Amino acid sequence: MTLNLCVLTPNRIVWDSEVKEIILSTNSGQIGVLPNHAPIATAVDIGILRIRLNDQWLTMALMGGFARIGNNEITVLVNDAEKGSDIDPQEAQQTLEIAEANLRKAEGRRQIIEANLALRRARARVEAINGIS
Amino acid sequence: MAMASLRREGRRFAAPLISSQPITAIRSSLIAEEQAPLGIRSISTQVVRNRMKSVKNIQKITKAMKMVAASKLRAIQTRAENSRGLWQPFTALLGDAPSVDAKKNVIVTISSDKGLCGGINSTSVKISKAIHKLTAGPEKETKYVILGEKAKAQLIRDSKKDIELSITELQKNPLNYTQVSVLADDILKNVEYDALRIIFNKFHSVVSFLPTMSTVLSPEVVEREAESGGKLGDLDSYEIEGGETKGEILQNLAEFQFSCVLFNAVLENACSEQGARMSAMDSSSRNAGEMLDRLTLTYNRTRQASITTELIEIISGASALEG
Image 1 (cartoon, one colour):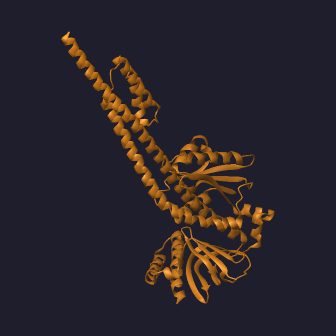
Image 2 (cartoon, rainbow over the protein chains, first blue to last red; image 1 turned 45 degrees about the horizontal axis):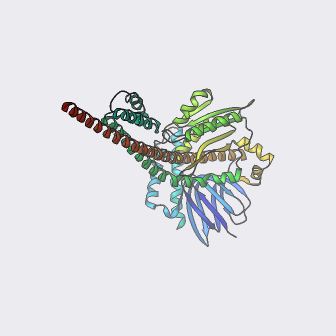
């Protein structure tokens, strides 16, 4: 009994195959999904998605969206997704630093909110790389 | 006898010039031409040659436009196909309910900014007007949101008061999701709606674009329908997590659904526009080619007629001298 996972972004299909288990970050915490999970529709926060295939964990950084878990079918729709293996550690670290600097400089509610979002996105990417190791 | 045959020639090549596919630049000179043959001995070959040159230029231009449209189509087609997978889960979860009775309908019409793309914009506008009529009724109001110059020009003429928002110059920057989601946000903020109906041309293949309507329901309507059962009734079997209340999640879901569906619709419409332009330019190149063939025949006839006239003059002059 395996789960079928589909991760979709507006530009392309990031993942479409069978997995053993996933761990998803939602607004109200992380949820783990095993085969035969109850049907659930949830919002996905900016964070990492962990996928387990045969005792090997893979991480993916997700930038917010929705997930629907049906009978052994998981569909995750996000604004953007990157596999941990596709992210360059140096570049992710730099993006994180730039995002932090922007947050400190930001003025006005709107800029602060945007800087916050950018920071969380950058942090998710860095975590995705560290998650593999 | 020579003069009679010349007059017959004149009338003969006036007729095919007028019956061929008119290209506007040439039409006015064609009409002037019609009055010329009767009574004048010959049309100068220069005039026909000029016309041939301009038709040939038009053919080159339309052929180039077809190539440009073909390359743009290739670029956009892969993206449109990738974005199709995005809204399918929404339909699987919420069902597609075009016949939902809603008080406030908003019709989002997607069209192109540039012309010369066949009939796709007119079909979109026709369907929008039909849906407007269908959803009109007591206590119901229907408003338009227009994307693209061409639909705006057509709808502004008779439905000016119903247009809520119109956005043009969408294709200046290459389309990407962030831009469309900002647009979707804009629309959702400014317009009250119970049901959003998006009308666009779906791209099936290079020669077939079908006008399609996608419906996005507002969260309140989704709740109402969920209670009444049917596809949406299955929604209740899903536990909704990840937020304070179910209503908030449904609201986010509806907004996300709208921006995904809008993104896909805009991409598909852009593909259909390029495909329609390709076929329109192709048929106009072909018409220009046919016109060129007919003009060549005319040119040769004119040339031979003028040679014949010269010969006749020389011979009659010589025979007059001999006495």
